Length: 139
Image (tube, rainbow, N blue to C red; front, side, top):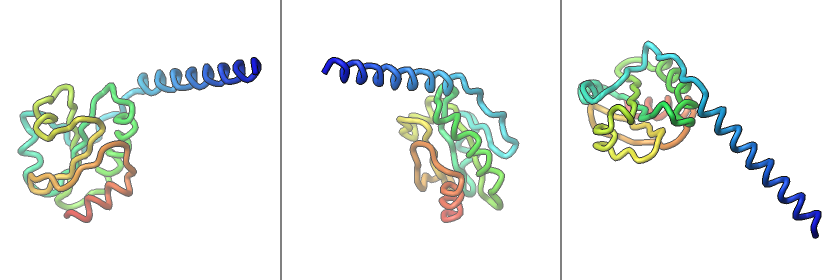
């Protein structure tokens, strides 16, 4: 009985240590470089950028580990788009009014707009193929 408590305690400690070190690595992970085809959105240009065509907007924050994981995916999506489709990113820390207007409560949140109107939204990490498919369905 005593040995099973020791084994369970050791496993719990190792699991906790693994979670802690993984979090620390993700938190310190650098942001990928800005991509030429991804529009950087702000309070000043948001409405103008989404008013024409299909635009996928990534609501993110620099401290968000899943957002950092999505950044390369967003860049790949931007590379694949043609025509009137585009991709933009909005830092929710610097543009809280826009995030509040669209009721963004968790990040990453990706909202697909068509001619200025929200079509659909996705919360959490998504694949490039999934996002490209969703954009193409709404062109």
